[in-house]
Amino acid sequence: MNKNEEGIELSKTHYDAIKLLEGALQKMDGIILSEPNTNSQFSCNSDLQIVLNNVLEHQKNEDDCSHLESFKLQVSMLNDQVDILLRKLNHLEKYLAQQTELRKQAENRLHNEIEAKSRLEIDKLEAMALLTNLKLANVRLTKENMNLKQMLVQNQNTTNYLNTNSQFQRSKSHGPRFYSSLPRHILSKKKNDSKNNNDQPNILALNDITESCTNLLGNVSQFDKFSSAPNLIDVEIKGRKERVLQNNNHSHLSTTNNSLLQNSILPFEQWDQKNVFEWFTSLGLDYLVKQSKSWPMSGSDLISASINKIDEKFNFKHWLHRKKLIIEIQCERNKDSIFLDDKYLPKARYLNTAWVLHWLDDIGLPQYKEPFSQAAINGAVLHRLTKDDFFMMQNVNSELHFSSLRCGIKVLRDNHFDAECLTRRSNSNKSEEDSDLSLWTTHRVMEWLCYVNLAEYASNLRGSGVHGGLIVHDDRFTSDLLADILFIQQNKTLLRRHLNIQFSQLLGKELNTKKRDAQCQSKFKPLTMSSKVKIQKKSQFSLKRKKNNNEFFIGDLMCPLSDEQK
Image 1 (cartoon, helix red, strand yellow):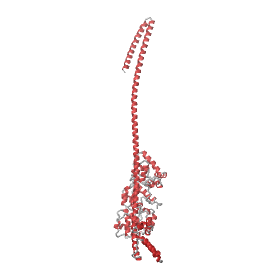
Image 2 (image 1 turned 120 degrees about the vertical axis):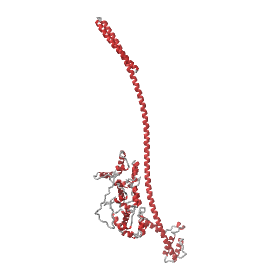
Image 3 (image 1 turned 90 degrees about the vertical axis):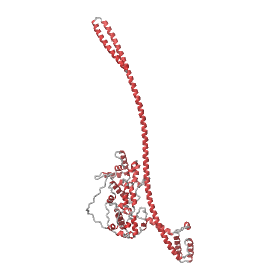
Image 4 (image 1 turned 180 degrees about the horizontal axis):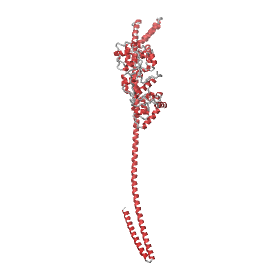
């Protein structure tokens, strides 16, 4: 830079000198013009012009050199800056590659964690379903064990009775020398006797076989183990056992115990007080036994009693206990007529309170177990449950839970209260039961959510009341409501769109069209998590017909009976 400044200063001085020289030459031209010698003037002018051209060329060359050097300096500086920028760019590229690799590793870990969580959820659902099946099997085996014990007691009583009769006949006909522990010797002896006595050979042989087999029931000897002769008493008891089991194929669901099964042959009117007390206990109303010491004395007293008399004699702890007892009495009083009016009661009566509590788990409402248990609700009361009963029993008016219970009862009616109709887990064979969406329990819906890659939200369905019957039979249930129940936020549009697509595929074309048509109606009101059921206030004065003493008013059912269902 100093050289450039010096070159510029020298050019300025040369320029000033040239100016001065031009001025002097002009003066000299004037002087020369005044003189007559023209040749000398021309020579002087040419010399000055040559000098001037040389000075200008020299100045131009110096300027070009200075500019060239400045350009070279600028180029070198730019090259240095480009090198610095290239080094920075390489460093940034390396850093970007490292961050990309770290991001891929984090995504792989997250994907593995999501898969592990979904597998754990599926295993948990399978374990819960297996536990449920084991509980049902335990109840079934317990009932069968009780039946076998009862039959064993009956067989023992029959054996003792036959032993006493056989001993009396033996002492009367044969005397003290007859030994029943050796039936083959007795048979051979009787064969010899039958040859001597030709009048009654067959009768005596048959009596001996019967007596010997009767004596062998209590004492098992080596003859019992190795003999191939059939035991007549065992054949008779086995046939009786098969008849009892055939009449009690729903023993694990029935509300009656073994003694009631024994007395089921007798009509209800012929039951004594003991049978009635056992019937109270089987209904879960065992506290009525203490109140029934004086009345009723038989089953006929209950059947002939009016509702007012039942209210006077019994002090019910829960108003649904009264409803339960009245329904059971009406079923025993008018079996033909009541079963024609309501075809669901015969099967609903076999579902006890334990099954109903397990059904609440299936439809996703386990929080209602305590009030249902206190009310001792069985299948018949569940079938006849009214809106007032529900609101008085549980101080909650959630429309979503109300609709869940209503749709659950409708599914049971459609399947005639079959205890094993619901689908609690997926089937690898894809049978018709698994394809029927209305039979899906809450656990099966949670398993479907895991299948469509929404396992992290599946646990939010617990206690929501979402099951297959609600999805199918309630036209207000949509994918948006399901997303709200799963607590998927509104800003997660991709997740909600994914759920909407999977939900539409699950419903199928017919259900989607049905729900869309219902939503297009003018009176349509969407169902939300905060929707409440409007409880209609009853007026003090009504024009309803006064009920008879023996007439029981059903009320406004949670799931009304249509004309076709009736």
